[in-house]
Image (cartoon, rainbow, N blue to C red):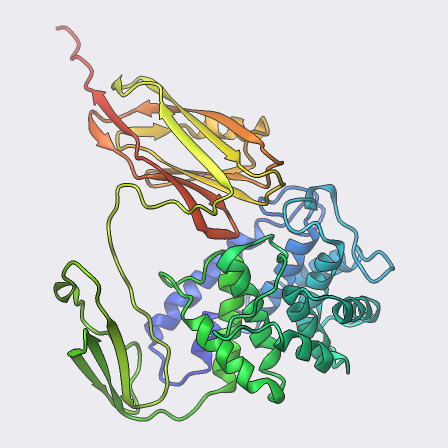
Length: 460
């Protein structure tokens, strides 16, 4: 998405392009490594492939091929072929056992998502699948399904597209968001689900002039959802970026000179003027000194110029951030000892639990380790072999644990063997757990603390 955006704008900093291309090349090589032995893709590269996730891969690799010449066309053809081989002859797709409960278990929704990925990739010969999506869209009231279907029907020039677009328009709230989605292909919820649905609606409305007003309201709402450079989960961020890039391409206009004002509590704190050929971001200075305790109003105003997106970054520190009451998982962490000798091991007990009476999708627990303690990769691999976790990563002072899904009220109890490597007294980062595709709802636990005693020197 970034390379597509940069490619459509003249005068972009070549260093930014080079960095983006480098990240794309590295990411592509990593993604290819997750191809299953029997074709298709799965989160951690295990057979069998996951049909809906593979569909996302087809769409992703097709998009990537437009800006990165090293994409393996043979791999794309092989993956498309595997996906098409999963058609059930009834306008849908069969699914492997692993597919159940890890993304949506709705037959109709999964079929619509896979059909959209194929129509986006300009795959032909899917008339029966498109017809099934059309029939279901005309009968449903689910905003996410309607948005998916509208894109499928527009891609395939189906005359029923306008009827579906009209139904979708009735789902738009006053603030611009598209509401009324039951779930998404990733079983996301909360704001992530609204971002996915609204992004899909924007992609459809951009191609229908009669719905320009709805598109403008939706885009205004979407741009305000960015937090820390992201739009929620991976899936909602990808769809938001697709919508933004498409919107930008459709609304490219000549630039005009102007000024940006930073206004704090009604007073101009700083002003940045720019010319018509301004390149890169216009960065306003930090203004923390103006934010005394209490309520403040911060505004960014454009004088002249051409409308442009903006972002506000807020940085703060908290030993234990606030948990969301909507989080569907709980997490507890406890070291069996708060003091340990250098070179010895200490057990860390971790419990991840589904606090609902329903099956939940991909779940993550990020366990913060105090400095001086190190996880054991061999023991983490054993947890995967035993089926207690599905995947793990280590990053800095964090151990990241993945579960593809959890049954109703399921509890996952783990013991991590940590090595006391460096003497000292340490406090780790707070640990947290959340649903992978609804990551605005997190449950945090207090940081772990430990004292590692230095070993006694050997007697002479």
